[in-house]
Amino acid sequence: MTEPGDGDAPADLQLTSAEWSMWQAFRNGSTCDLHIGDPARDDPHGQHLWGPERRVRARVVALLLLDGPPPQPGRVAALQLTGAYITDTLDVAGGTIKPFVELRDCRFEAEVVLPESHFTTLRLVNCAIPRLEAARLHTEGDLHLPRCVVQSGIRLTDAQIGTDLMLNQTIVHKDRQGRSLMADGLTVAQDLQAEMMESYGELSLRGATIGVSLSLRGSRLCNPFGRRALNAPQLTVERTLYLTAAGLANSPFSSSATPPYGIGQTPSHGTRVQRFECEGGMRLDDGRFGDAVDFENARFIMESDQELSLRRIQTPELRFLGERPQRGRVILSGARVVNLIDKSASWPGLGGLWMAGFAYETLIPRGHFPLSLRLQWVAAATPEYAPEPYEMLAASLRSTGEDADAREVLLAKQRRRRETLPLAAKAWGILQDWTVAYGYRPGRAAVWMAVLWAIGTLYFSTSPPPPLKAGEAPPWNPYLYSLDLLLPVIDLNQGAAWKPGGGSQWVAAVLILAGWVLATTVAAGASRLLRRQ
Image (cartoon, rainbow, N blue to C red; front, side, top):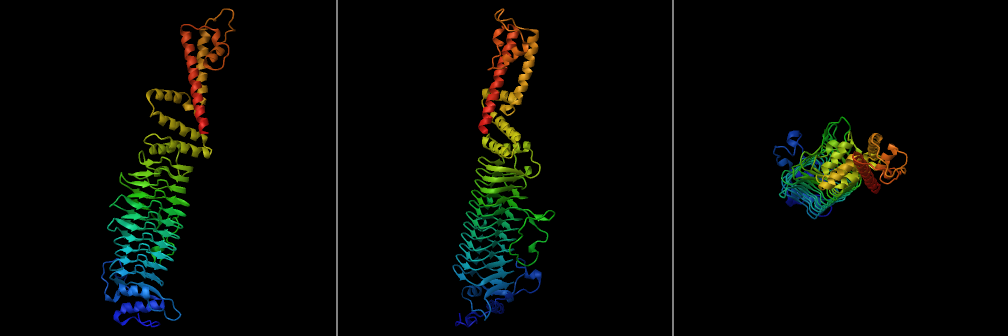
């Protein structure tokens, strides 16, 4: 540098005209615009070559950032550069950059190296970047990378962002390890917005912490090179994770301005939308979400060995309202949810859903979701019999006053359980189901009792048995006699007073046996029902 107070550049730098304009704009806090006025030729992602009139050396940019000249009197120094071609590698690793930095519509010849550097605010808007290396980066304010195209990945491992991280409409391709965005241990104090982003590789957010919301509205995550498109176990989001559609009409990105908060709201009805799409597996295991996880209109394209894994997540609300995955599995094992908002068309079929240990309190179906389809939903989650999904569904229905539906669910559980039993126990189960529906429909016992009573009364009215002891039998009454045979505990002083023989003996034996069977099944069902209550 020159002497203190002297804002001129060192003579040995031999600044070009573009660099001299950038130097003066830095001191004034103004924008150095190197656009030529032709949109096609000004596009940093286009095929046109940029001439020397737009080139600035990375070492000059680094000098301004790390040890720049003093500002003009009454101005605040800032690097605001538009339409520049930055040659060589921009490396400010470990440096402290105090000026505000915004590079817009710029093209970088080589990677941008920012590990362990400290910025106040850094904005790279609509830039073409070979690679962004920024592990352990610290910013006091925002880190904005909207509409950038990064050819070989972004690394933000253990970075700390003081306010918002914006990746809206950014296109990121994979690095040598197959990762598009490597942001394990990332901390963002406010929002992480990656709306309408395109990721080609694994987007890794393992152990990341987001202070408000994480939005991937309208984004496309594609990883044909590996197992997962989004790998984010132990992710913490204080508010909501949005994996939903983004509105395209009147988009705030239609102009060249950079909106401070992105798209922001779920599109209203009738708005043309771009849905969230994930081609590859997704892992959100052990995540903590303060308000909700929202999958409305999401599309998952997976291979048969890939998963949408939500193991052990905790959130007050899970909105599973996306398109049904055609392949792969949805895993909810051990998840804890208060409100489950879903629709029947969103869940995969048999063998595609696992929810052992999945706990929820309230079911809020969106659209038509009758109990028969809900039971198919549970059956899809239990290719091999497991009682917990049935019991969880019954408890949820009972908590909302739908006791009849809860009993139907528990009856379905007993029928599934019967399939796993040995032959004798299966036969006994069929008998319980046929007679009193395992005690969940006790009215059936009364019907069977009435039918058998009528049959017995009709038979013994025409074929009365002789008394056991002549002169000691009570007056003959076929109604009381048949009822005494059917009731296994109550004694009406009729059954022991008469001595049936021949066919009457067989009829009496059938009535006694049927009475015991009905009483036993009713008692077993009532006991099971009381235990559940």
